[in-house]
Image (cartoon, rainbow, N blue to C red; front, side, top):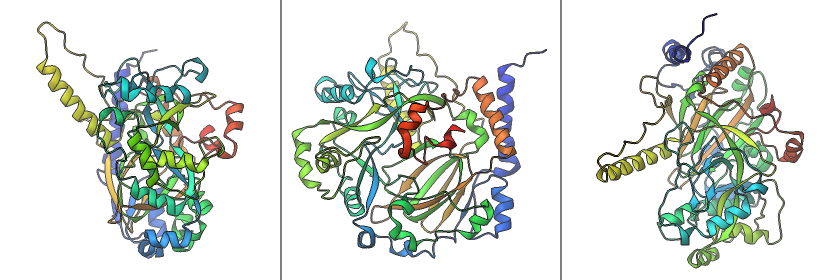
Length: 497
């Protein structure tokens, strides 16, 4: 039997990318004010094709009323789950702290247990504590995982969940405003590596957070979208509330849900790739970690804690319970007095995630590479071999169709079909907030899912993507328990099946 060359299989996948765009998807996202249910189902749901609907949200009371004063009046004392990160990158590939700061990672690193030299919370605290005094160069920032050609040997990356705390909604809104200032008052690169005293809060819990945590606001939206319920054949599995600003960026991922994403304030920019182009997404296995509260910081930052008073806040780290002095713990993180850094989970867990950088980080990396190339060019020594060319990047390949980019403004909604790859950026309104409500509906596992599985397998056989890790052990499933979230990287039955 004849053997098919890998290049021939890759050429077929590349032709598939072109065919998908030429036959239906095109180069932009359609926009309609409203659509009859039959047309929405036929032209978009059945075709697995995104569309922006401009006339389905603007009649909501939320569209006119959801400012800080109203939210505090209606639900200010209600506790919400807040994600805290040092850089606005929750649920993202993140460098692990090393002996000399936050290094660049390697997606091929072996998963190691916290008891065998892994950067656990204690080790990470020691690393970050000594950073400002021991490192003089910024080798950090966000770097590409293996396959991107920009990693640094000897360092590891992980998939980091945010640090989660519960606080009253009014305190979150105050923190969103106050955290826009740099508490440390310094642009020092080593401070930036160690967390820099900065914290970015984001309301993004996703476990049907609007219905579960802030039901007082349900009267301001259409809880049941009749046209969507008819098209998808059921009620939403989750209705989520999102509040943040431009500092928070969602990394590349896909969801096993049909998604109606309605913007109430500000705007959201989605960068999209069709499901079958997952062979371009550079999927890698990473050790899973969570952002944890670590060391005390510079006295100038410690003094800033007096500015942040979250009087009713409680401290709830991922997978843990509230310790004594919980209010002080929240204030320490919120003020920048305590750094946040990723600590690997124990027992170890592995996650399959895209190593493609979000657009803002990719731009920053390109600028850094250009600066580095200019410096190295000026210092080039005769006879020295040039650096090896980076591996081929199918995501950025100019011969392949580029991602679709669509901005969803306040009063508009995006239908994002299940399994579409997407990253999300946002711009706040004049008050500094981007607010959205999204509805997740169960996806239909039909013949399209079978086709997609074939593409997934081909990408693995070609070595373009790594295979998914084994399902969580019974111990991990039991540990997740009620904390298993209906969100990436899905820990419930949907992720396992």
